[in-house]
Amino acid sequence: MKLARLVWFVVLFAVPAGAQREQFQNADVIYDGVVNHSGQKLRTFVTRPKAVAGKIPVIFFVGWLSCDTMEYPDASTRDGFGIFMRRLIDQSGYATVRMDKPGVGESQGDCSKADFNSEMEGWQAAFDSLVKYDFMDRDRVFVVGLSNGGGFSPLAVREHPVHGFVSAGSWGRTWYEHMLELERRRLTGEGKSPAEVNAAVKVFADFYNLYLMKGMTPGQVIVQHPEWKELWYDRPDGQYGRPAAFYQQLQGLNLGDAWQKVNAPVLVIRGGADDIMSRADSQAIAEIVNQVHPGHARYLEIEGMGHGFTVSDKFYDALVPTVLDWMKQQLN
Image (cartoon, rainbow, N blue to C red; front, side, top):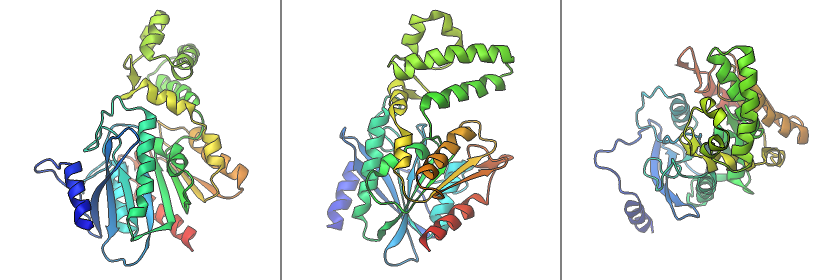
């Protein structure tokens, strides 16, 4: 049975010659895969602690917006998300699961064209795949959502029981609200005057209404309103490397509904110097959970920490112990 699955795996994912793979001091890596509803085969990375027997707790990671792999073979990486995941894998004693979205790494598809729904199908399939591994305790699963993934992570697990959620550098409102606030910070950071910022945000309010809620691409919006051309800074068919449909589907999410249904403990973490996700973006998650289940969510803001978990360009070392201590408290 194991041999048959291994053959299926090798056929499904051809490993490039000379490809560097992850190695951990305290965990072994299992390279596996799932299939989304579109038939795309998506790479998953499963780790199992070397010195722990029996069924063990699980950390399920839900990733960010960009088309970057969740595999970090370079143990000396300076990427904050990579450091965070590698340390949790090596120091937790838990099993972990990650997935590369469509078109990333060895996953099939084209990330620049993949919409959010096809990505979500992958996260859901990856979570469903936990049943394959007899060493995973599915009654003790923690979901760690990073950046964009920390906002929609309850939707990735659906009806499955979860022992706790960690949402780091994320959002809990509508994508429209997030983008208007982001544009204001961006324009201010570029040195625009208060008058210029206000005037531009008024335009962006209409621009994002047509783009996110009326289903137009940015290019179609500009054709209809050529006077806004100078304000748009990205592709005519999308934004930040993803297609317009991706963000229109994000806007269609009701994160208030998703988070109010969560009855597990929630740890919301935000860096005080995060210039991507605002305090209001992150606080919304804790506020929603605590409104329905008082005391279930904890909001933690780390002074000086940026979106990538760094303080003064160095990874914030206390982050991993903070998360692991919180997880252990939930297991007691």
